[in-house]
Amino acid sequence: MISALGFNSNNIYRQQKNEIIDQRYKEIYAHEKAHKNAAGSLGGSIVIEKDTNGIPVGGHVDIKMPVLDKDNPERTIQHADTVIKAAMAPNSPSSQDYKVASEAEAIKNKAKNIKNQSGQRLNLLA
Image (cartoon, rainbow, N blue to C red; front, side, top):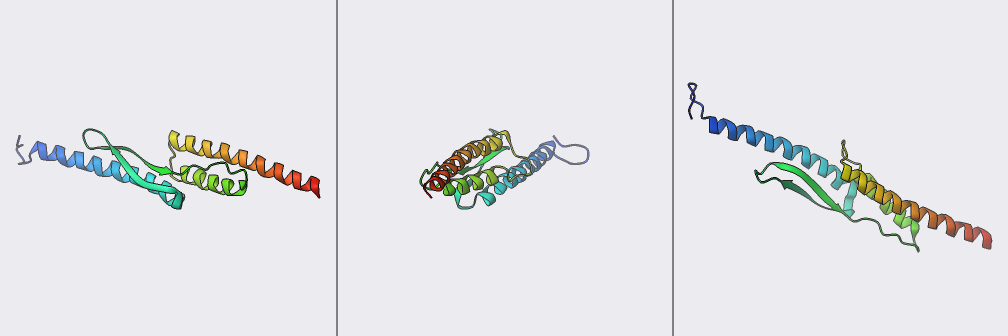
């Protein structure tokens, strides 16, 4: 349809849709880039997920979760700190971001307990 001003309503719709897509993409990309930057080498690629209309609806960055290393708990603690920092890096962390941070925090606490126990054993032997 062409209006009295000579604009095609389909073109206006496409333009508005493209503006929405661009805006959503930028918002999601900035959120995921914050994760990626904070994760460093532990982070994977940025993935932007789109709905059936091609509109970005979410995204993610895979991150290598820490594994409890009983022989080197300090390494586990450092790894967990990086994961927590990466999960909480965006201005508005999502519920999934909080979940990842919580899982890393639990692993970190286990590593701290192991580290403290091994320190106590060394004190007893001295």
